[in-house]
Length: 370
Image (cartoon, rainbow, N blue to C red; front, side, top):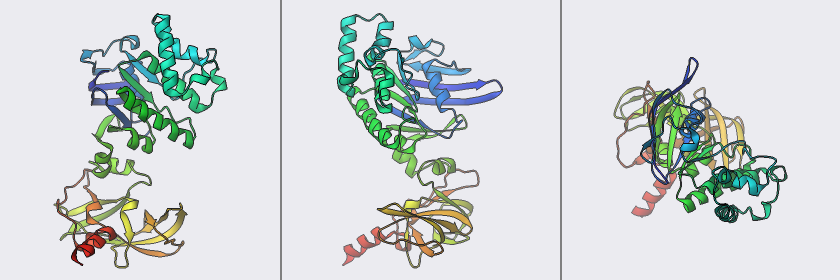
C-alpha cells in the first residue's frame, strides 16, 4: 500500500475552475472520505488522482513518487465506479480476472486471486453468472472484487453505493468497512451520503467550491465545525441557524434568549443541532410546531422559531401536535456561534453550569449532592 499526497491541485474545464488549489494527505492504510455539495469538485478530484484527468497545476505523489502526469496504468490504482462498469459479455469470473489478464499475469496466480476474492466477498456461487443475472449489491461486490484482485496501492471509490436501495447500501457499506480492516488498504471514497461519510472515514474531508473547507476525524468535524458551511452541511436533519446578538454572557434574538460563553460581542449566527434541544418549561427557545414526524423511538417537530424554520428532535413519549407551542432549551456547550464571515467563534472552555445544562447533566448533579 502507499500514501497519497496532493499539493496545490487546480483543474478547470473551459472557463470554469473546478479545483482551486487542493492540498490533501492520505496516510498509508487510511480511509479518507470526500464529501461536499454537488459541483464542489469531489469526483473531479478523484478522477485527477486516478489519472483520468490531468491537473492544470499542482503535484500528485503516490508512495513518494511524482505521478502528476503519469497515465492511469502507471499509478497502481484500483477504481470502483458508481455504475459498476462491468463487462456484460463476461462472466463474474472473467470480470474479476480482467485486470490481471490485461497485465499478462500468470494463470495460476489469476486463479488463486479469484478464489481469494470470491471467498472474501461471498461470490463463489456466482462466478459463472453474467452481470445481468446479478442483483445491484452483487454487481457492486464484483466491481470491488475486480479492484481487489489486482492488489493496487490505492483504492478509489466514486459514490459506489448511490445506485443501491437503502438496505443494500447499509449491507455493502459494512462490507467496505470490513474490507478496509482486512486489507489495511489506502482508500479515497467519494460520497454525498452523510451516514457513509461518518461511519466509514478515518479522516473526513469537506470540500466547498473547489477547496478543502475542513478535514479531521468525523467526530471532530461534526462536533467542532470550523465554518457555518460545514456546520450546515453535516448532520441530518441539518443544523438550525438563528440570527442574534451576544451581549453580557447571553445570546438573544427573536424567539430565543440563551446563555453563551462567547469571547466576543455583537451579531452572530447561532447553530443548534436538532438533537441537542430538550423540553423545558422555562427554556430559552419558543417553537411553534407546524409538522410532526413520529419516527418510533424519536419525534421530529418542525416549525417556526422567531419566524425562522427550526427542527427539534424529541425523545420519550411526548408527541406534540401541529399548532402547539413548545418551550425548549439547549446546553450552552452545544451552541455553535459563527461570525458574519461564517467562521466559528471561540467560546469559554469551562464546564456547563446552571440553566445551560441539559436534563442529563442536571440529574447527574442532583445525584452527586443527594
